[in-house]
Length: 382
Ligand SMILES: Cc1cc2nc3c(=O)[nH]c(=O)nc-3n(C[C@H](O)[C@H](O)[C@H](O)COP(=O)(O)OP(=O)(O)OC[C@H]3O[C@@H](n4cnc5c(N)ncnc54)[C@H](O)[C@@H]3O)c2cc1C
Image (cartoon, rainbow, N blue to C red; front, side, top):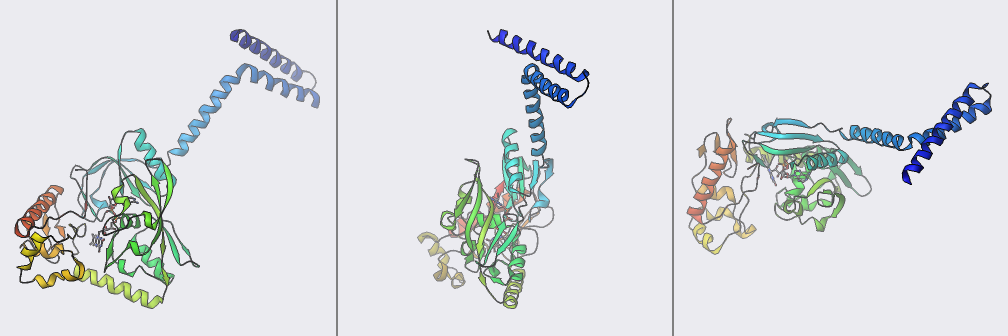
């Protein structure tokens, strides 16, 4: 029955086309043109409808694919230059994304090609393996930046560097971010780790965070209380499915010169306090004291310097220094003389050198003071 209908459609279709051509070869009055076009359309529709539909679909898909491959996927990109540690092997695949759409495309690409993903910000809190990363590294370059003058808020993309953010806030006489002056990296990384100094952190400025959720493939807004921003931690650190796209930051109207002055002061403080060689910043987190290690620490002549009554945390640099590890070197990796919680790349350090040095530090500090150190930096590709 279906075959008969098909055949009937085809025959009538051919008849309409022939009639159309006949209409065309008769004198070309406007009427015959009209009949010609009408009959041709009906004929084509009946004979080729299915094929026509398929061809159009193919064309649309092709166009869509072309539209979708806006992102530039590169292979075998050495990651060391993308980090402040200047260590790390190649990413199997690598892409820079400058918009939310590109990020979603990159994620889709990884899924289709069965690749793990790693989200790279400013690379200032990472140790990347010498073997690199066996998947797709997505470098976040979402650099949008705008201000709401009435609310004194800044909306900034996750790729905006802290340096650029501070410059922007200062230009608009907004105060509240000066503490972060000199902090390397981008906004996304800073929110994820709730970066901070001087007792202040991203917690103090975040209003809400816009994210892409890999689990349900949706863009969502997280209000501040949902971000769980506590000491060097957040919901984004606990849940790798949440990619930070942008954030709204609340600041206050201030005096431009005073803001600028504070920014410079803090940058200078950093220059004097932290080493300038390649590093990922503080290597270990501060730890909370236990009854056991507190007893051992109290025996130290410089115990009063810990100022533990103020913060109730053990400053890591202090215990590493007290363990006699300043200047300790394995391969090209060395404990800084200036600040013992910094492991430096003296020029040719490998990730393996760093891992060995870090585990030596942990073992020494545990054996001497009973303090269990935990990394603040993130290991990638191990
Ligand atoms: C010299 C020096 C001094 C430092 N001083 C401080 C300090 O005073 N206080 C402090 O807190 N930190 C400090 N740091 C550490 C570092 O600068 C911060 O942790 C910084 O916020 C990391 O941001 P980033 O963009 O470089 O992140 P990256 O190092 O690129 O990434 C860190 C982690 O964040 C994730 N990430 C990055 N972007 C996103 C995103 N958009 N969405 C989801 N996840 C993301 C990455 O996957 C990774 O797991 C210092 C580092 C250096 C080198």
